[in-house]
Length: 84
Image (cartoon, rainbow, N blue to C red; front, top):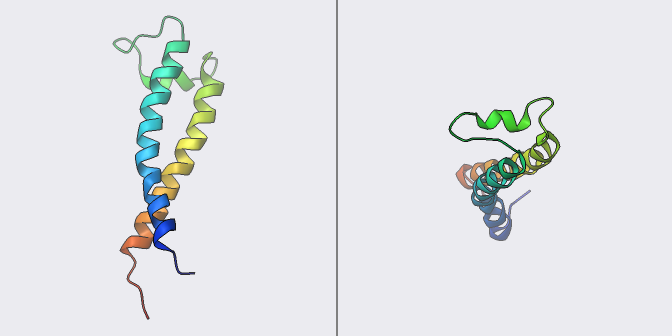
């Protein structure tokens, strides 16, 4: 399958979106965790078993992983030499 420039551009934009979503998710989810402190706790505590923010963090992580995979595919398509 030959990727169109439009598809490649969309896939590469997934990298930008994943970075923006990660920062946004961190800020939004941590604000929902009463008593959470950036200075005293690690970000992994937002997804810890029993944490009140675990369901939302996991849901956003699935989207983050999907966008990151799209970006990786876009990079692979750009870096693969075409034969023709």
